[in-house]
Image (tube, rainbow, N blue to C red; front, side, top):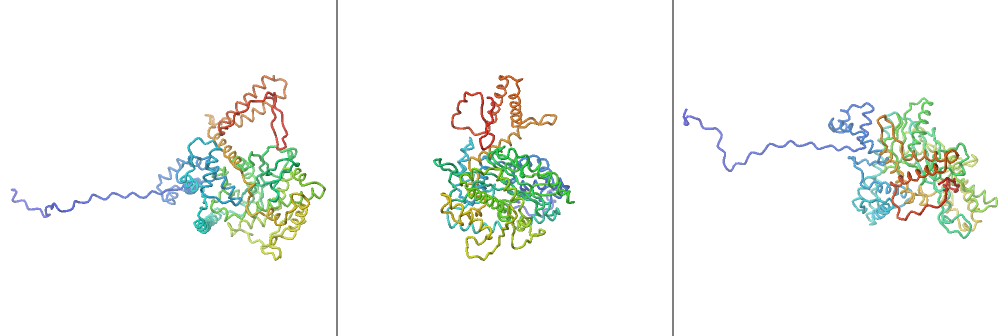
Amino acid sequence: MSDSDIPPSSSPPPSPESPKPSPPAKKRRKNSVEVHVHDKLKALQKMKQGCPRHIIAKEFGVHLSTVNGWIKNEKALEKWASEHNGVMPTAVKRLKKPVHELIDRAMWLWHRERSAAGCTFTGSSAQIQALLFRNQLGIAQKFAASQGWLSKWQRRYGVKFTTQNATTSATSSADRPLADETIADKYRAKFAGMIEAEGLMPGQVFFCDMIGLNYRQLPELVMNVKWAPEGHPQKQLKERITLMACSNASGTCKFPLVIVGKFPKPRAIKDIMKLPVCYRNQMSSYVTGGIFRDWFNQEFCPTVKEFLVSRGIPPKAVLFMDNWLSLPQEMKSQEVRVEFLPPDTTAMLQTFDQGWMRNLKVSYRQQLMKFIMGSVNAGGSLDEAMKNLTIKEVIFWASNSWSQLSNETILKSWKPLWPQISGANPPQHHVDLDENAQEVQVKVEECETADSSTGLFHQNEIALMREFCETLNRTNAYRSISVVDIENWLHPATKLTEDECLDENEIVQIIMEENEANQQIETAAVDPLGETKTTLAEAQASLKKVIEYCSSNSHYSREQRLSLIAIRDIMKTEKNILAPVASAPVPEPLPFDFVAIADDEDCEFTMYER
């Protein structure tokens, strides 16, 4: 066939001006779904309870391989959550620590304490405080407390500051309650769903809260008076302890108070075999993570399980609490676990402060007024009364106040969070009994009285305040005291007063202690037999006992005892590696063969051979 016989093509030849064919469209990648770390932990918890993986993947809108990755990184997720000590932001999606973690935690504790005292903050004041913590913590890295750091810190902990512009501050303060109310409504719905899904009853739902107490605090008029003979320098008298209270929603299972003091063996209680409270000691009188873990595992879980079994209720319970610093996240023992309330809803949902802790503080101060009046009326002075006040009276007064807190008050405190709680419709009047069960204190919402300053108090309480005012007016320091001053001291407007807050040195001590404990846990290696190595604290405690034994046994020579003491001093230098370096030179050791160590606040010394 010739070329002329080939039929022409039906399609016209391409013209040079025709557009080029477009390339095939690329397959559009599906947008990735970012799941928060908190939600990943919840998903892992559901899978442990038997929920299939494909259901979890469908619920969060991710691929099945993504869920498998969460299971693979389960230990890393749990470790990260534990290191954040219960203050885990819900917006975090990746396991990334802040660069300056110690400063972040110190700033959170500082902000939490000052907020409880009603203090307001600005961004610039927070930046200055962060620089002060940097110097006290001995941070070697470059840290300038920049605006970028401040913004990230606020997002991590849900902190909002007022601005220096009055108009802007007014607008933000008007918008914030609406936002907090929306968050509170969401959590209230989540709480109701949790109660319904798990079938929890009021006896299985617990709440735990703590508060600082300056047990030597008197009305503000003489707060700066030193209780000592004339001629001594005046300074603020501060004796701070921490009270921790826990009860179920029905009030049928109230745990003994946990009181944290500064000294391990105060002289006033060292001879008492059994205390009505659980006493612990810490250098800053604060509930650290170690103290709470011991209480949760040794006191709370066994008591709750025994209580529920005795009532014929399944041994399943949930402990709700505020997101305190240094508390581990995802705490659980079988069917007993801890749930932290969101930080933005704490003030709205918790009437526990008004119903529990403030009642404790008011009842304690009523006992203090009676104690001072009894001492002064017996011919003693105010100085002598305050000197005779010891931790023993504080423990028994606080324990008595806690035991007399009515179930009605506890039920009423749950009503904003749990409106459907059984028995949450108490009468209009709230009744509490005092120590001798003779006087009744009735707080009425609207009391018709001519005196507006004391219109919210019952006449028995007013009579007590007036009698206390007359007693103090007979002293030189209180000649101008009034009933209004005593009322403001007895019923403060805030949860804490400024002298009950932790100061900067106490905050640094708590942060360093927690950091040291976390590092010891991380560095504790596991041998092939699965036995953990002895930690530094355990070795020091054992060595102390060895030194005490050898000092009282003539079988060991003086040189051998000095060798043990030398090892003890070397171990102390190993411990001080984690502490900030002091700028002052270390003094030379004293040329004595014995050293004195204080055992309590009254400086009762024990002699140890150097």
